[in-house]
Length: 351
Image (cartoon, rainbow, N blue to C red):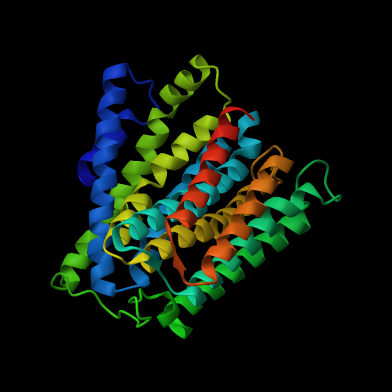
C-alpha cells in the first residue's frame, strides 16, 4: 500500500483530477494511513517507548513541514497565514481532539485513564511555551506591522523552538525516559509490552522505510484532493479556514488511530506522548523551517493569532494542566477536551 500510494501520488501530482480519480486518491489515502499506523507500531514495538511515538510524530511533522514550505513557495495571499493556521490546527487537533478521544476511550473501557503526570506535565508545559512564543507574541510585538515578527524576533523564535524541542527530546529519551513510559494502575512503570514477539532489526528497518513512503503518500494525496475539498467548502458557503482543518485532520490520522489503539490497550501515556509530541514537533520544526524559507520567499509571514484563537489556546492549556495534576482521568476530562475541539471546529466554520 505505501508503494501504491506513492505511485498514485506521482501520477496525480500537480494535475486537476476528475471525480473518479479523487475517489481513488481518497481510498488510497485511507489505505496509506492504516499502513503508516501498522509500520509505526512495528517500529515502536522494536525500539520501545517513548522512541516509537517519537518516530511517528517527527516523521509526520517533517513531511508536513515540507508540504507547508512548498505551498508557501507557490505564493498568493493565502500563503502568508498558512504556517500559523496549520500549526494552530495541529495544536487543537492533538491537544484537544486526540487527547480527548484517548482519555474518553481509555476511561470508558477501563474505568479511569492512568498516566504519568511528570512526563505529561513536562510535555504540556513545552507545548504551551512554544505556542505562546510563536503564535501569541507576534500579535503584540511592535517592531513589524501587523501580527508579524521582525527578522530578529523570528530568528529568536526559531532558535528557542529548536532548543526547547531538543531539550524535551533529550529528557524524553535519555535523562528521564521513565517519565514517558506507560504505567499500571498501581503506578508501576511498564518497561515493555509482551503481547507479541519483538520484530527483528531487519523487519524494523523495512517498516521504517515503508512508514516514510506511507507518510509521503498521506501528505501528498491530502494536498492532491485539497482542490476538491476547497471547491466543496466554497460551494457550501463555509469559511476557507475549514480547508486547512480538513487537511490537518487527514495528515494527523496516523497519530489519531495509533493513539486510540494505545488507549484501548490501557497505554494512555503512549497516546499522550503521540498527541503532545506531535503538537510540539509541529511548532518546534515548522517555525525554524518557515524562518529559513522566509529568507528567499516573498510576502509577509503572519504568525500571530486572533483574539478568539488565543482564548481557545489559553483554555486548552488551563484544562490540560488541571487534567495532568492527578495523573488519572475520567470520561468527564475527555469530554471537556472534545468540547473544546468542537468549539474550535465550530468557530472555523462560523468565525
